[in-house]
Length: 481
Ligand code: FAD
Ligand code: SF4
Ligand code: SF4
Image (cartoon, rainbow, N blue to C red; front, top):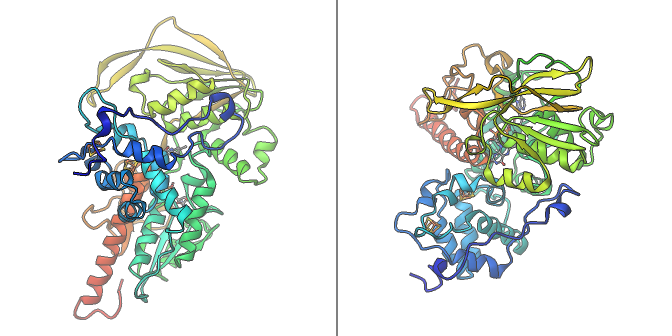
């Protein structure tokens, strides 16, 4: 083993510098700096090169983490980049926004008493170095193929599939209803976690790789799925999940109560320099308001931190469970607390107050009772605990469900699960319709970027196999439907 490694005994874990809270709430830029070369090498050298690397097992992409850490520690950055980009299409994005504490770093088993290796920040450093050195190149397939694949959805699942299909020489057309590519990378996740130039840089590379983007195309709206399907040999549906869950609380129809994604989209558009009327007229702008965000997931964390940056008067987060039982990342909660968000754990809304416009939230305290069949403790209202919070704006961040795709796409036969996600055969990534594949959140339900990338890669491989098999079939003339 390299003498550069196993330095966890003598070297403490450190993260790249985080900008101070006062400074970072003044803009929407990322809050973490980059590692410099020396820090990246030092932190990578803490890895103990485990025989069974649990970090790798618990990375959805099974990234070869121990090897690229060793290469980084030894200064072999080109090799580290080549290895890391073999398993991940967007390592600089995952390095920034994966919840590493629940994935690779949470499974890092350096000996007891020592903190994990800083895997995500090193992954980001490797790819940022590669961009700076000009090592990241567009895909140049060895042979162009005649077959075409249509992809609906330019989020991480659709984009990673597009890149992998270009590697195999297919003609790839990506359709999206938005005017920019990236899906939630562009319009959901705020700039302080992922600056938009990072997503745009990938978009340019994909265009230079020969991927054709058809933007502002609302499939199921003015464009029929069948019409696009007719132009391609295979289709991939990667449309994500966008139906916001609602809350049946008295007063929930009052003005000033807004869905989280509308709010975040408006903020991201403003940062990109777009004209956003609902922001400019104050509907989706938290400036000078008492803001209450309802929910405890990553979307809620993004909303509270966005409201702080829009100079809200106060920002509270209402969540019916406690801190240890929340779905959002602990790292993000800490960031939010540092930035001035007040968390009201074990609290649930009982009513929204106001005549025409929301003026407050009536809330109740919650106690966690016995676990239910899923093992989670059931929230129970504490009698007589009603209290009020001032609120000029309430943001509902209660999660997302899939839209009714079979109806939307006019594909009555398309099978869905009881949650409304698309049903696929996981061995082939194909829906019950021959030649129609699916990947990402529309299959898993609201998930993570890294799982979208994994599914997109798997789908590309499955599509390739399916097209090749159709060509090899004795009587096939092209791919038939
Ligand atoms: P999406 O990213 O949703 O992309 C789907 C694309 O399909 C969109 O561009 C959409 O416009 C397009 N589309 C949909 N319907 C149609 C149609 N009918 N016609 C044409 N185009 C259509 N994950 C993390 O790992 N880390 C995080 O920090 C994180 N933060 C998040 C914050 C927020 C606010 C949200 C909402 C999610 C967050 N996630 C995070 C989850 C992550 O963003 C998603 O799991 C991931 O983007 C899913 O990828 P996807 O490609 O399946 O779908
Ligand atoms: Fe960790 Fe995500 Fe990178 Fe995998 S892709 S190594 S889980 S940061
Ligand atoms: Fe290195 Fe931690 Fe992975 Fe072990 S689990 S190989 S120490 S990063």
